[in-house]
Length: 302
Image (cartoon, rainbow, N blue to C red; front, side, top):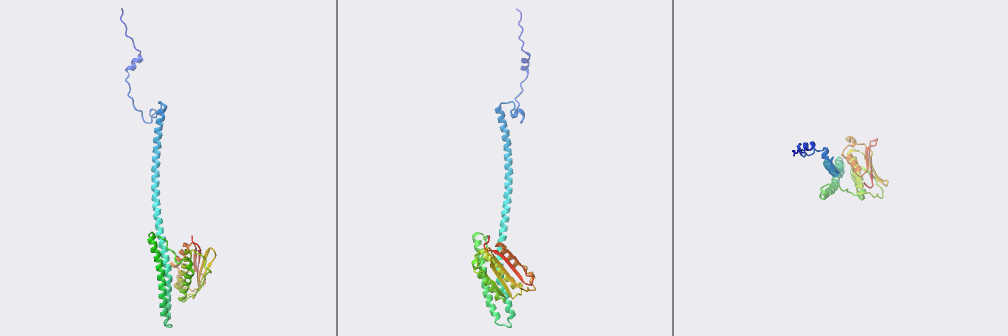
């Protein structure tokens, strides 16, 4: 028998067996294999979900950081605004207190000074004048102290109630305004000036702030007459035009040589008082040597 020849394997199979198998290399990030191309649909969806989730998370945390920064900035701005408003409130309250004390004290003290000076001038011809002046000054001083105590009591009540930030309670109230106006006119008469006082009858219903504004402006205007004018008489007129009270204080002059146009705390106080009540005020020479103060005060403040 002849020898059997060995079976020959196909060349492709033999060569494939001789080729070493490549290791399973992980796909490069964001490569076609990495994002799932060539895989099953579920693998593709999972890969897309992971990518989109990462993008969404990055966007979310970025927006969160931006929002947090804006909130911190807004919070800082609000704190600064709150501090500014608190400072303004304190300054406004100081202004109100200063105005009230000035209006209460200046009117009485000016009348006292003028009465004392007048008594000194006529003492040689009227020996009884100094004694009369002393009695009048004593009574006027008591009234000034009473008025000051009322202001201090209001300030103390405000301080005990809320740390001193309470608004200065107006006194006198609206119903007492006519009596206070008559008292102011009487003080000027006692100081040697004639006063023509005209008030509406009956006195219209007003709130406390409006009545106080009319009284304080009148007192300050009459004080200015004592300090800055030689006028022998003064006209004070209050009229009611339904919505507002209108005040006019006029002296015919002449002004004192040292009057200097009557610029000072008095005019500032009157204007502030009128504005605080929602009204307006004008004051100035009348062109004939006199001086006129006019104010419009709403019967009910806003």
